[in-house]
Length: 332
Image 1 (cartoon, rainbow, N blue to C red):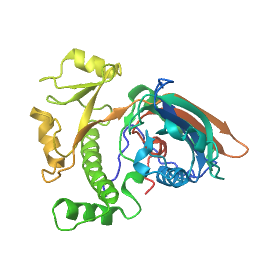
Image 2: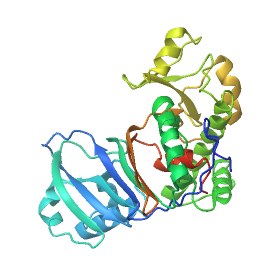
Image 3: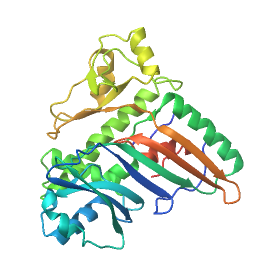
Image 4: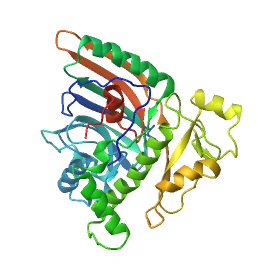
């Protein structure tokens, strides 16, 4: 598995980071709901319960198929998470009777459509790092300044690949090349997504190593306009493109190989084509190479040697990547 590389950090820290319900808290930042319509959105707080378990429990309780339940994002099990789930409005009375030790319905809202993956603004994270020494906290604060100014690599975190990384990627390749059939469509899709993500991560490492002081833009890069949420491809990198990138208005994107996806051109393509697989039949897409965390705060309890982080990331980005950047090491 490709090692995730973090530029502008010359020191490795040995603090302790564990995902559990006390030290890893995630809160979805929701879209605006219509407050009318035929769907009921549930704001749910849960502990040690991933999104699939939540959906299964709700579906069994209501006596409905799990695909009738909408969700905006997938949340880890080993955490305390707040996320938004939609159910048909006709189950409004029944859901009031739902009770579970790990799951609490905090609020409800009416909405005019079922929630789909990506229907959120981002995620807020509150994370505790343990065994942080005084020199470590000084370095952490230094790297936070780097991240605030330059953003951070938008790697897929280790959670994307599962515990048996190489075995999962080999199995995904066997499925893609028709050597193995997995009847469980959800499992097959997760394996292929991990396979696509591995290409992106490998591409990003090479791009970051072109210039360790800043992300080097190449002619033919495909950019995301963050204000318009649209992709565009300038033929050459102009001063305006460079300035807009430094002003966090646009970011270059990398390829998750598959069908119906834009490919870079020119100089950028020479690197990108090394991290492509034309056999993949799942839809491909492009992912921002760099993301900009917002509202990063860092508090330190010297008596407990605990550093408490609080920050917001765009949807689809991994908090564990930010923590790895601070530590300058991979956690799996």
